Image (cartoon, rainbow, N blue to C red; front, side, top):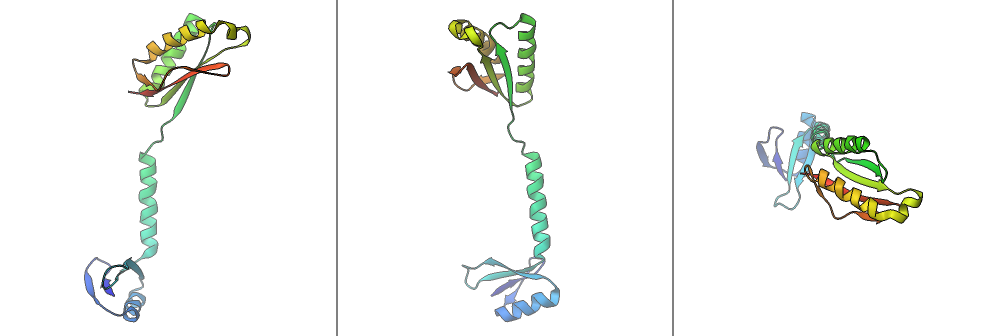
Length: 153
């Protein structure tokens, strides 16, 4: 076996029993680096420290790699003008922060009979959100809701 030291220096080609003795004497673990190489490569190292460093680097990667959040803004057909503007402002704020935005227009009761009003309101909202985001498809009617998703630009 080709033996590599704790500092990365190449020690020698030694039998497995000798490599185990050296690992035991130095208080380190014997780690198989490459079993397909001729001869196989092993390394003297502190395996617990290696695992700790790997977990630590994985944790920092997860911290820096933020998952895409999905926020939702819900409308109704008979929404007041001021309420509409507040929801548009909040939706644009979500898009500016880098979140995905789901715009849902809920139809209640007899509003299902006047879907053309709902589609007009959805088109109006889509033009407002087009400034900060890209629509992923067209508005779709699913049950009593018309929804479309925006991703930030």
